[in-house]
Length: 284
Image 1: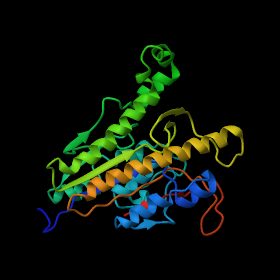
Image 2: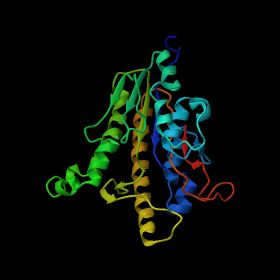
Image 3: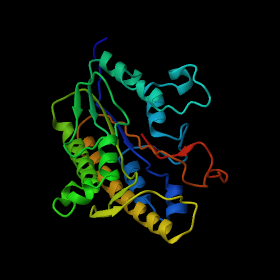
Image 4: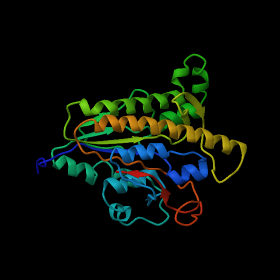
């Protein structure tokens, strides 16, 4: 089809499990008001009541990049089906990437940490040596390997490898506008602030493992909320720097931050924790 008369670069950035402002305030007792106001000043529209149709990231991504509900993308699927490979299979040749390729765009993908988005036929796949596959992480965490390595090579712990991969992705996103690739469609799925917690609010290394049921009120849950809010503060500041670097180039951009699971009882009315829709921030 060729290029448009005006072909802006387009960025689709997913910050996994980034909570809505009311979720952050009511559940984690923290605020990202300054971050959201800064995005608005940059020209973004912030959807304060954004909600996702699906409770798992892979389902949300498969639906979004195919511009359709999963019912239409997957066809007839048994109601009791729990195979997440089905939506994953529809990422390799999705509608959004096909559209941009038809209009002479470069397609650029930042490899996600756990493979939640394996894409075929992209022009540029950006990966880091620190990225672990889901299998790699499971082997390290379920065997004594990490305990044996830690005293000698702390930089190879799963927490440090995750930190390095996220920092590498953020750094390359800032530098990409000057790469000479244009026009381009850029997809970056960043598993942050998704647990485990590896960043403090200033980017300092921390290590807080799995997530907790945020409906509970226990010492461990309160500690998790504090660490989680710190990681939200870190990624908010870093992504603001990324967006500023991108917008410094004379092109229109699109960014969207998505989450993974329902974590709140807020909304227009009180929403039970079993509510099957995810409350997310969408920024365009």
